[in-house]
Amino acid sequence: MKNTRIGIIGAGPSGLAQLRAFEAAEKQGLEVPEIVCFEKQENWGGMWNYSWRTGVGKYGEPIHGSMYKYLWSNGPKECLEFSDYSFDEHFKKPISSYPPRPVLFDYIQGRINKSNARNYIRFNTTARWVSYDEDTKKFTLILDDLKNDKTYSEEFDYLIVASGHFSTPNMPYFEGIEDFPGTVMHAHDFRGADQFKDQNILLIGSSYSAEDIGVQCHKHGAQSVTLSYRSNPIGVEWPDGIKEVPLLTHFEGDTAHFNNGHKEQFDAVIMCTGYQHKFPFLPDELRLKTKNNLYPDNLYKGIFFNDLPQLMYLGMQDQYYTFNMFDTQAWVARDFMMNRYEIPSKEERSKDIDLWLEKNNNLQSSFDHVDFQTDYIKELIALSDYPDFNLDKVADMFKEWLNDKDENILTYRDKTFQSVVTGTVAAEHHTEWMDELDDSKERYLFADEKEEALTEVETTTKAI
Picture: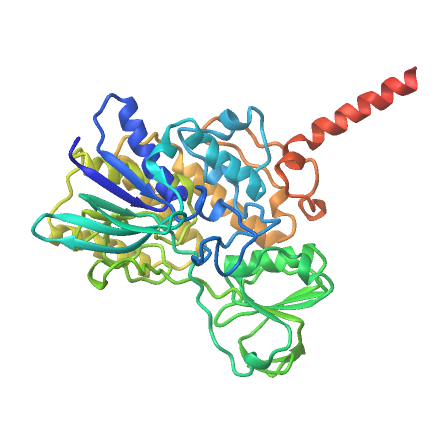
């Protein structure tokens, strides 16, 4: 394995999962290959590495992250918990089921900080081009060291694309939008609801980002929030101040017209219209081409590029499961690269892909989607030594979460769940989510302790 080189593009949750998988093998006393991970940002974390910037970053590269202030987990943390690194182990106490972004980022970093993963990552380095030589069976990466303005190339035996697929906006056009006098942005550039206080906001789309940004704007003081859907509404029971309308057709100044004849004036428009799988560093014959779905075509086991399995993609699915799914993919990819897992012929791989695609096409409900991805992860766990966890119970939690949102979109984050890793029941957050306007880690983790200390001081003072 000493002469084998592995390149990883991206140090977000998927790329870090791959590094962690190799570390786990090394701890077992196994010889691991040479690994180099390239990350265009200054720090790891991918989407969870929040930046206030939009458009371009420090060195002129397109901003990767679509993260924003006041983002709280929109699913139970118990559904994404690493099976080899629990929330209990990291925080040393029970926390609520829906933490804010800084807390989840702290958790992601907690596991990787215990390793020497940073030694394998070249930050401020972006992949410009990839080629594959059929004779040498090696990939050549052309890379830019952004900080030092240097271009160079390196060769690898295996390549893992872990650059994510929620960073290149899908931006539709509507007639008259160029004359709209207010703010127009994509969800990718949304950095917080503060600027929309007292405004009438139009969101285009019926995705999770539309749902969450709409609720965040409502929570932080927007005058009204309107969501425009193309085919199906989100369909939850919205509170006063939020409504759904059919598809937008065009603008006349600040007035939006919809295909049911409704028209309304708005101060701002946010396009929650999804993202493109975009890999500008890959040639056409190596590029994954797919829309956002639960099982992209041409990926065996959702990982291996069928035309060239030495090329692997992590985290390219639409996602109910996240961190722990990336782990299971990374463990299987690792075993393949270390010759511990053998994949079948291309014909057999194609049959397997077709079976999963057929199942995917027959899914009807959100519950079906959860069960489908649960079955997918069960299959991956059976192929490697990733620590097992109770996937059926996690699936039940996902379904309970879906019901909670239908019941009340503003209060579902106040619910608590039980960890399948440790059995710990989550703590109730000290403040109801709709009343909590501070998403800092300090406020989230230590407000109770500060309040108790103040109460103790007050009690002592009175006694004196």
